Image (cartoon, rainbow, N blue to C red):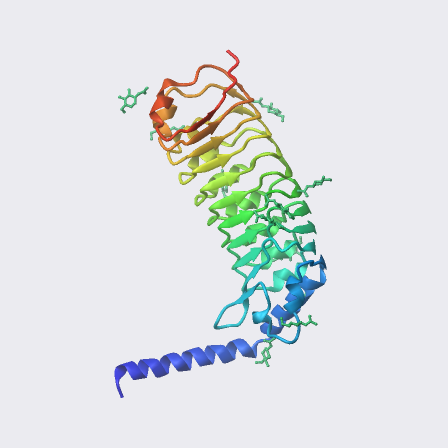
Length: 301
Ligand SMILES: *[C@@H]1O[C@H](CO)[C@@H](O)[C@H](O)[C@H]1NC(C)=O
Ligand SMILES: *[C@@H]1O[C@H](CO)[C@@H](O)[C@H](O)[C@H]1NC(C)=O
Ligand SMILES: *[C@@H]1O[C@H](CO)[C@@H](O)[C@H](O)[C@H]1NC(C)=O
Ligand SMILES: *[C@@H]1O[C@H](CO)[C@@H](O)[C@H](O)[C@H]1NC(C)=O
Ligand SMILES: *[C@@H]1O[C@H](CO)[C@@H](O)[C@H](O)[C@H]1NC(C)=O
Ligand SMILES: *[C@@H]1O[C@H](CO)[C@@H](O)[C@H](O)[C@H]1NC(C)=O
Ligand SMILES: *[C@@H]1O[C@H](CO)[C@@H](O)[C@H](O)[C@H]1NC(C)=O
Ligand SMILES: *[C@@H]1O[C@H](CO)[C@@H](O)[C@H](O)[C@H]1NC(C)=O
Ligand SMILES: *[C@@H]1O[C@H](CO)[C@@H](O)[C@H](O)[C@H]1NC(C)=O
Ligand SMILES: *[C@@H]1O[C@H](CO)[C@@H](O)[C@H](O)[C@H]1NC(C)=O
Ligand SMILES: *[C@@H]1O[C@H](CO)[C@@H](O)[C@H](O)[C@H]1NC(C)=O
């Protein structure tokens, strides 16, 4: 018997024993029950997307569902732009193998169920462009594998949970066009993987936290259309990877540092208008060679 053949037998044995282990647990039924509970909270499905969610097919073959090959557990629920209306059932929290939940661009209303915090494998949560209300559940901070969090264009309110600073893998954070209040938590400075942040068009007030200057991978920072005041922390002008820097339409004061064009060499767009900035546009900006959009500053002196 060749060594390769032995290895092959070994692999067959380990994979079949883990399959029977997986099937031996009641969890596959839980996924099915959770999906049916999810369906029961949908009040309108004009495209008939969820018609296939019935007993004639195994749930892994239902439309919008992806299962893992080995465990036959739901890993992705993708209902992007399906014209669905309804609420998000708390039973989604039982889809414990879920890695992607995409409900963006529908008409989901009501709150984001706090049971979402049970989805510790969740990497991508896309809920933007719905009619969700209420606050971000505090235990979203338990979704420690999230790298994409999209909650923009909803009717979400309240303060941001401080614990969001624990989402250490977060790369994209979209909170724009909501009714969030309170300060930008300084714990956001701990989100060391962040590349894109958009929080524009909310009711955030207070200062931009100095800690945001720790986010060295930041390329896109959009904080416009809020009630932010104070000065822009000088640490932000050290984020050399920044391409878009937008703070327009706030109550910010101060002036731009003279060496801006050198410290932000990758700048493509700078939106600083409709604040209370003073002074001149620094000449060094002519060295930010990628800059193509410099929205008017409205300097007051
Ligand atoms: C769950 O596993 C059991 C036992 O292996 C199997 O008989 C049943 O068909 C499975 N149910 C689903 C919904 O996959
Ligand atoms: C159940 O799903 C199958 C497969 O998609 C579909 O052909 C059938 O029409 C569905 N049954 C009902 C009652 O919707
Ligand atoms: C949102 O869904 C509508 C149909 O409901 C579609 O026309 C539109 O392109 C979608 N937008 C995005 C960004 O997917
Ligand atoms: C699933 O979630 C719901 C609501 O959070 C809960 O009531 C239920 O007991 C959970 N477990 C199963 C196996 O469905
Ligand atoms: C938001 O979703 C609605 C459908 O619910 C769609 O008509 C609209 O185009 C979407 N907007 C964006 C920016 O995707
Ligand atoms: C999340 O918060 C709710 C209450 O807001 C709680 O019932 C639930 O057990 C928490 N944890 C998880 C993992 O869902
Ligand atoms: C938010 O609610 C208001 C009414 O309270 C409504 O006019 C608006 O369209 C809603 N926005 C979204 C994104 O659902
Ligand atoms: C994040 O940083 C703050 C200081 O900005 C610190 O006090 C906190 O313990 C850190 N950790 C988290 C998860 O917020
Ligand atoms: C910013 O506004 C808050 C009220 O939102 C106020 O308490 C604070 O003094 C202001 N800070 C500055 C530096 O203007
Ligand atoms: C910006 O970076 C320079 C050079 O690395 C450093 O000397 C300076 O202290 C930094 N400034 C801030 C406000 O972080
Ligand atoms: C642009 O950068 C070059 C080389 O680093 C330097 O010699 C020049 O003075 C800079 N121009 C301005 C306007 O800062």
